[in-house]
Length: 277
Image 1 (tube, rainbow, N blue to C red):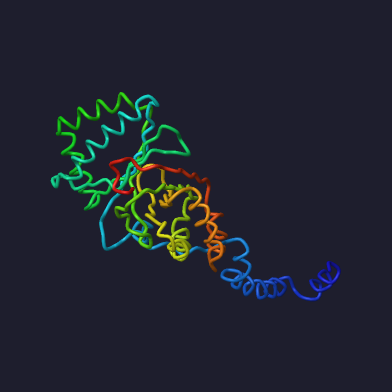
Image 2 (image 1 turned 90 degrees about the vertical axis):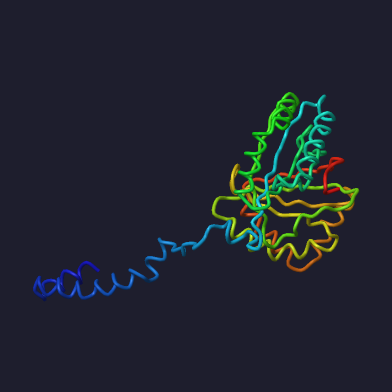
């Protein structure tokens, strides 16, 4: 109380009062420097020691992936598919090009009249550079690109790495439908996403539905693509519902949903030339 403080100051000298006040405050300030007082306002975060691309990708391989999204003029889709199949086959069998097509699809549900291609470059960025240099010097390929451009409305691509804990995308027999679930994450959450999905993926292996999981390196950043295969839409529904019966799947969903800014699902049909049927 103020009255007691005034009575106290009259009983001791001004210098003694300052000395006693300092004696009281210094320990408090020292305590608050690292104690509960500071923790109320400052959240200390330990700095990450490596890029998430190194922490989450497969260290035993140096493969780089490219995904292409081509929006095709509706009247040109059949001709586009035939032209792409011809060029993909030539690149696939030519050992001089360090790339191969993993899969090619047309979107069934999602963006209409869209083609999606997934390429793998064995050897990472040097292989990508080597391949593009050779293609730019290949007149047949330049003519192909010129012809293809007449069929397109727009196109975009991304460079991706694959998650270390996901299945390796390998050719499979059909018929199958494919779902690509794309997630745009909040910046800074990729490591957390990977930690949760490293546990969650075990709940989605029973029906061999997991094809591949990738995260972006160039293009739209903090984007994840999960690729799944199903016999049909009914099989997809049953497989996804069965995951909820497995212990741990619900908590994985609970903790990953807050990391997502937006998400998209595409149902895709493989083209005739796709290694993933």
